[in-house]
Image 1: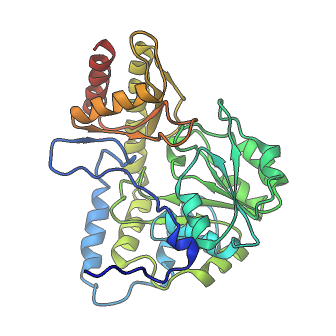
Image 2 (image 1 turned 60 degrees about the vertical axis):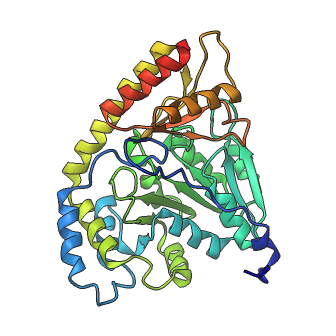
Image 3 (image 1 turned 180 degrees about the vertical axis):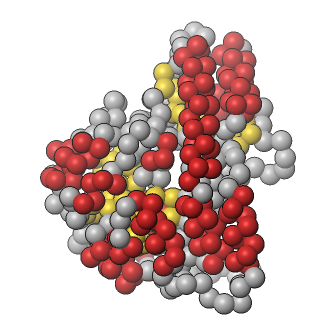
Amino acid sequence: MPEFVPPAIPRVAALHAYTPGLQPQGGGWIKLNTNESPYPASPRVARAVAEAAEGLRKYPHPGSQGLRAALASRHGLDASQVIAGNGSDDILNLLIRAFAGPEHAVGMTVPSYSLYPVLAAIQGAALVEVPLGEHFALPVEAIAACGANLFFLTSPNAPAGTAFATAEIARLAGSFPGLLVVDEAYADFAPEDAVPLLARFPRLVITRTFSKSHALAGLRVGYGLAHPAVIGLLDRVRDSYNVNSLSQAGAIAAVEDAPYYADLIARIKRTRAGFESGLRSLGWFFHLSATNFVFVRPRRADGSEGPPVARSLYDHFVSRKILVRHFPSRPETAAFLRISIGTDADMEAVLQACREWKGA
């Protein structure tokens, strides 16, 4: 093929795309690198999707109104405070479209979700990074003074897994002059969330996903909760039919089967507690998790730690057909590995691999 340079705008030509976790080829892998649920979705989801498949010749509801109503009921809100998307990433993208640009900066804590800088760069918005620090305390004053028009706060944090107290988020929401987006992808695994704050703070937006606690990563459904005026602006920039018929039906069925998911979440939290106990027995530091993953700093038998040590364990896992995540590009994360919570058997296999590696 002849060489061709597409006439892209400069910021897109220079863009480094978001890199998702590896997708293994072949069988036999223990996949703990993308924080998916180790358990299947509610049987009601499969039935709802099968029924919806009979109507695929027709467009889906353009505004996902049935799903918005179900989510509003779940959270004690009005449907005008809810928007649905093709995963929560879609909602994040809509927020960037509506509230960021060359004269409207985007802020984020670091470390956090690495998609935020990509979305900001696509929009041509300056990025303001506010460090969380070694102990991942919420820097309220620094965020309030950062000058961003739109600020993304992951709570619980990814990749650390630490949760911010609702009282601290309220303090931030009351002092930040722009739009504060609390990305609650993992909130169902945490002791509290920020949804009750929506009644007090019109500049607050909360985003959620069905990919983690509801085992629907393959359907790609997420949503946002906010003041109706914010939702109205997001609807203006939203792509028509942004959530397909199967995803709408499956997500509604998931919302309606709360007991199934309460049991699933409790099971994952019990497994998480057992895994953390195993890491303590190894003498390794990890951040106490409020998510479905654990962020751990491995240590050799001689006491050595750091990025090369973390990479060594990562490679050992791969040799045992176990996939986890390593984030070597930032000093705050390079010495750690992020390990999703799988089944009890998965986590025992991880701990056994850790013991083998540590003793090698």
